[in-house]
Length: 275
Image (cartoon, rainbow, N blue to C red; front, side, top):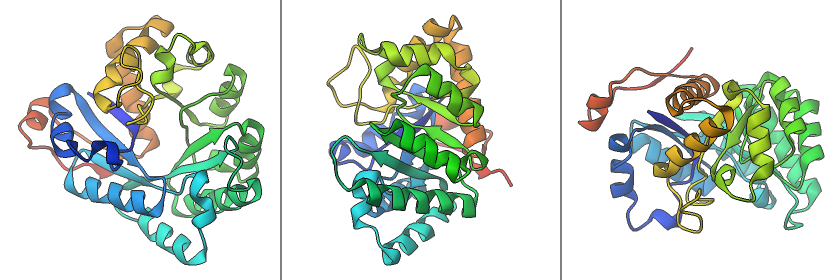
């Protein structure tokens, strides 16, 4: 069973067939899914999905592009969301300088606050970083987020930086870009870091892997990503699936036992976070 560590099934791209699509996951060997928040609203929607589907967990956080909407009042709401029993991480949070707004100062302020929140409640972080390589790294180091743990989502920097994050105890999120013809940099990252530090993710509905690039993405495309990683690492597909699942279970502190046939019949056992 594959573990989908980063998807956005609350997105409007799934409004027409969300229930049908999610109902198909178990029979297609997608075992667990973490639906990741980008705002208070999307986090709330993700929590609703996690409450409805036993195989879905949620992450609570405000994406850097939405940090200009944060204030003390709604940050308190975010904290309450983070404490929900099926919220397994704070994210996605970080820095994104691509668009030039919100200001870097605003993004840094609320990135720091969300890192501190994760440390307070002892949940890992899901880091979004775009065109902000050094600032992201420096802030994670300064706030001692290596003690929290987490994943650098949709990793887009050098293999050397990936290795530095691995030394800090972070995982590297690998998605559809690794299958792209122009995805050389991510291929080099996968080659350089131990598979024990890799997580599978799709970022659905975005970044569909080849040969489905340009189409709406979903967790059903995870095998394409796992097969590419297996090819790069010279490993079996089955080994990549098993190791990355264990990685995700460890990072998200999820402890679960369930049988594939039981899942297919809808008799999914309750998953419990480790104490």
